[in-house]
Amino acid sequence: MGMTIEECKEIICQNYKEIYRFALYLTNDPIAAEDLTQEIFISAWTNADTYEERSSIKTWLHRIAFNKFIDSRRQLKRYNVLLDNYEKNKVKTPDDFEPLRKIMADEDLSSLYKAIHTLKEPDYVCIVLHYIQGLSFKEVANVLRRPVGTVKWQINQAIKKIKDCLLDEYELE
Amino acid sequence: MNWNKKQKTLKLLEEKLRALSNIEVPSMLEAKLLAQIPGSQLNTQKHLNYHWFEFWSWGLSSAFAAVLIFGIVLFHHSTLSTSNGFVADPVEMPSKWSIIKQDNTSFGMPVVGSEPNFKSNKEPNSSIKKEL
Image 1: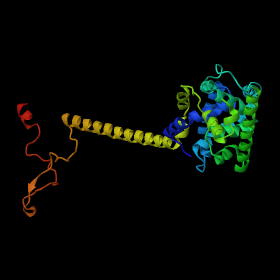
Image 2: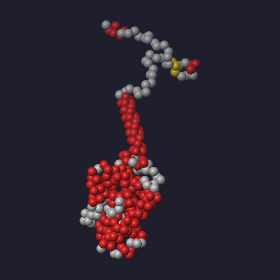
Image 3: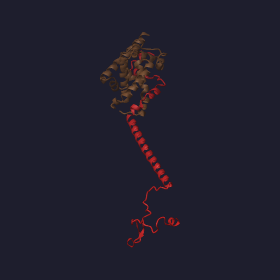
Image 4: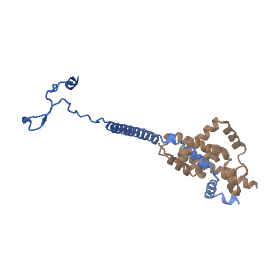
């Protein structure tokens, strides 16, 4: 696909917020998310020929983002550190995590944010893509290269786990 | 908020999950991303077209300049020649020994090309001889 500079600008303006948000939920670090977002768009421009118009630009960028995150996590040490952060310190304080300040300020959302981070990564990514990023089941399946039925099942299971997690939390209180 | 009462409804939970998208984005991120667009790589066709245009415009302007300079030199040369007494377009003038004579057969038009007359009625140096 040949892209002009104007088309690239349009794609950035329409999608950079969503891609940054996805990168933020993947990395749990605002600075790493910013770096990852830049890498995603660089990768998009260099692989512009691989874009097939069967899927939307949004889906294509999300797939690049997820693949880039997986590759980076495998190859780069800093993403291993981020993975450790994800596993060990899944929830950070609002002061450390400025982009999520509004979420952390809300009690319900803060609880929900903690709850989704108790999920295993495949379920977590499905929840992020479907509910937070607003992708359809088909688009999520396209991004993750999984069957649509598997994605639906994973999301249902994830919702149940979130419910259980929230119930446990309030029962403890 | 009592999750025991409200979270049983899936819609509420989904609504809350969607509300997690309300994050802040760094203000400079868009500018950074826009600055990364590699125009030369993406606009390959445009770039090639530009090169062709550049090549043709350069070629045409060079050719025009060359023709213009040649024309100026030629014009200047012809002007100088005429002012020095030369004839730019040489026309063969009749020599002094050519004899133009009227011929009845040529309807009064001058005929060029008769035999040159080297003979003279006067002998050379005759007046000098007389003085001597």
